[in-house]
Length: 413
Image (tube, rainbow, N blue to C red; front, top):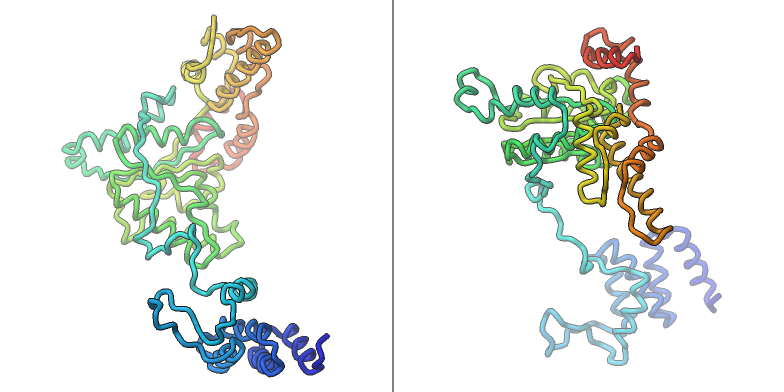
């Protein structure tokens, strides 16, 4: 408590109503009159932080500082220091007030420069070195890609003759870990095109309209780098069925995606849109209409030849001895590419564990690979359990006929 009950009452009132600037100025004036300049400076500074041109606050600040402030004549303008009472320790005053009012216009050393409009935005445009030759198996998928985009790109005269445009959309779906993203990069590498990968974090923003603007900018970047493969990963997150969305903002994002794919103003020539999902049944039906993602391909677990190639790839830099890739491939039927990578990792752990225990380096053997195959179970079974219900009870349009045929072949129906 101070010796002035009025000042104490006003201080309590200001703490209860910190945004009442008139009350704060009245308190500052009383503090200056009581010779408590340091406290008055804090309150005047709070007012100036909100109203830089407040003359009363400026006058009180000057009075609290010991008199009218005058620039030092010998100092350059950029380094001018306020003068007045020479007994004031300005460095100490600045340190004392630093916690009360932060600088209004100072910028931290690591703070980035502000973005100057959407033209200043930078997206990750890659040049893939992977080609379709690096993709094991997937012969039907490769044929479809060749017909829909790669063939017309390599044969401009035939493309002109048949009126085939360099635009299109292809939806890849299937169990996770089967190489949909890898395939998209391979398509970009095959055509020597730019590659832009889009995920939900690149689009969604808390501010109204910003998500739609982000989506538009990404498509504009792809158009500006044509020929370009624009890969929409986890498309079910951005293009979920609007009838199932409770958020109006997400419905407008889906609408914007439809516009970018096939809008009146959008010119997507040279932009090939590849989308991937594990849940095609959750995608808005409008996204799969002609002119958008109108072609659908099922990406299945790798066949025997592809499994052997994937196993060889993941063992290429590891010490191996006497491994029969064909037998290991036979033991890993229905495994995804990610599962096969996990098999190789587990087999390496077995050999490393024995090497640590015995003190002698041991190569990865056939027994290690088979033991790892028994320990690692295929992750695709859970996906096919869900997909089976869709193929049996929600395939009126026939869009999942290829899935139904595969399930019948595996005797899962």
